[in-house]
Image (cartoon, rainbow, N blue to C red; front, side):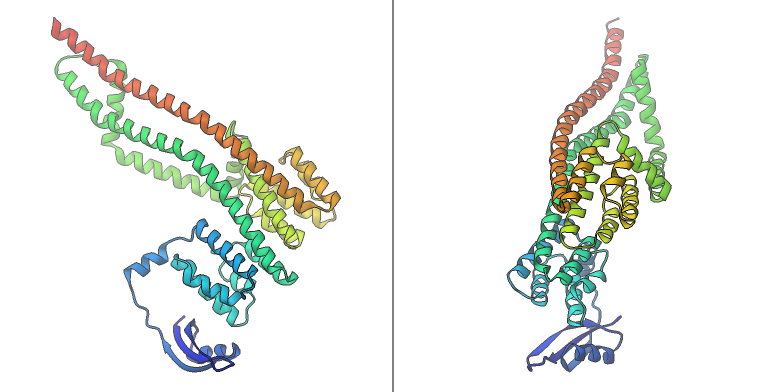
Length: 404
């Protein structure tokens, strides 16, 4: 669809200008007329390729960009600034080009007569379904500013939880990567050179050195097999996990792992409780809220339980009953949900569940990190000791031969 640069005058005669997409000039003039503008000049914008713009458009919209946008939009609406002015201001301030262009398109959609939720719904890859549903509920209830503020807090809490988990696993991941890199270097380059020297001097290689030498020679000679095998294993796993049955089996395995299983379960339930509590407090209908929650829990086993609870609620049952029957939700969470339904404070109880589980996850991650770090160091130390032994044992044998 071509892009046009236009100049026009609004209802009070003030000149305005901008760019807008439209199939033809006539349709653009008609669209501007519906917005209350009298068109004075239109030119089609010729696309100009610039390498920096190309890479700017490839830059992904990350969680930090969206959080800044949510917080700033909430603050501006709460300050009494109208939607169009807020979006226009944010469009000028945001550094991410893709998000800036999207906000500009949303602003033009609102100028063309769309509501904010309708304009946002045109970009499902940028704005999540939960955000669109909350905006729609805010527009219907007249409490858009309060709901935007609630979503800003919600998005910050979710990102904070993700950062805690990532931060805790960052150091062990660095240790593991460094350990693998050093081991591969020693096995593929150092050990074979030592083995060659020892063979020339007539030293019989001990079993550890012989094993490492053969492994290193094989990896060095058939490295492409290792790389290809790794890629095939990765893509095979992705294809399997993308199927309905495969995703269910993988997610079930995540829940029953010895150490990570309880942590993964509580993270999924925390997302369930936080999202559902936020939606219910924002006035989103309970059935629609449960449908949205099903897509954000991040585990197919829990998602199926959420679906069955949605069917039960639609048939007039309480939410807590099917969650209890599933035995996938901890009893303390089910009891708090039941109390919330009885007292009419479901959103408050759901947020308390999420707060408690977020705190539990934070403590568990710290504890897990304190166990993983020394364990990784111990394993790497043992591996390095084995490699050093395989190098030193032949040296001792060679010294004995030279003394003779």
